[in-house]
Length: 239
Image (cartoon, rainbow, N blue to C red):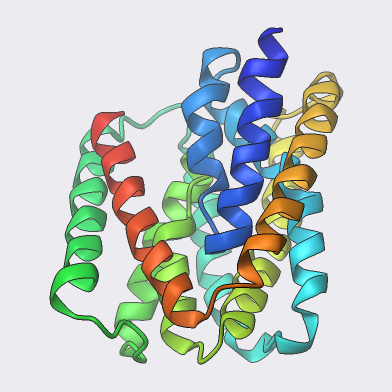
């Protein structure tokens, strides 16, 4: 019953959220998994649970993937995530999480109520900052999605372009960061049963999300992303 409540049901919800907005599954998982696992392990389990869902989504939108948009941001993101992983047991990031939470809430409110058009190309230094911050928090807590989503959304003209880019990005990230977590002993074979159970829920949620996104356009996806960025910020503030 514990695994059903803290793994399977959250996985279904995470699959729906990820399938519609392109990110957010880790936020859902990190509400539940730390109840039964340490935070670093929770982040790793959450990432692996969504791997099959990411494969499904990347395959669904494969014709819209533009790898040139993915490679350099991933290099920055992955480098910072690797450094953050080395600090996971030695740094107090409560203040940093609160500051990031405030930033995300402010960005969400800005794009929802002040600036209606969020699809514009950011200057290169803004994009680099987004990747550094996202990589840092992905390494620590497995939550690197909000600013990454904002970056890819700014480049996309269609929902297919946006979802293809961000799902391919996260799929590459999962392969990379999971390898490091296993190497560092954060994840082990004893986590496999929970991961497999979660994968079942994640696939179910992704299938539900695919039914929903058929009826959505890029503007609707955009609004969902901005709302979830705000939710992400609140999550950081209250943790």
